[in-house]
Length: 230
Figure: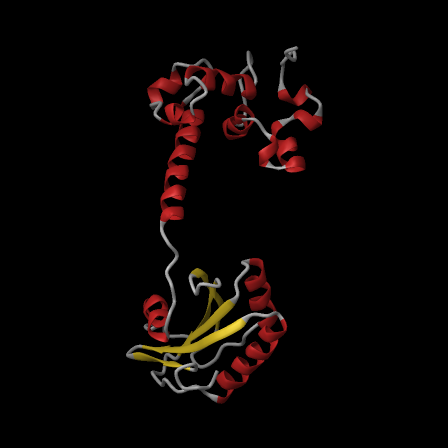
């Protein structure tokens, strides 16, 4: 029996799309409910779920067909202004880009030179020190790279707990630490060696490997691993 739909605000809270999403997760929602969340609101004559149902009916419940609707197609539906139409069209464009990126294999970091080539453009010309971390999976493929500190012209301080917490959240099995030396000196300083050892020792307790620590300069890099220091 079809529910008498007025405004969503008058529904039982457990049945409202947003509240249902928060309580049970996206998988618990029907397609029309997900679209209703994107639309945000309905009209004085129909709520967002009813409007979403009209869109799906017109597309014969085919999301691929719905993604081909033009702005003018959407505007033919009562209650579908430019803002709502653009929101749906933007969602489909986002989905296309996501699928494209997802299809691309993660870069594999198989050597110090591969890591340096990946990160060096971000660091080699900086006038101050920055420390970055590469998080890798079991196949040494790069999950992500993140800046963890930004310091002065001569030093940065590592937050070991934060780095390892991020690694575990990403299900990374190994880490490459990277920082730059604006001075151009490739050799690690005393603090570099001490902080590297702290990270290596702490990572062992979390079953995470520190594969390397790179020092990037304008004309090259130093690798702790290549030097036998890790």
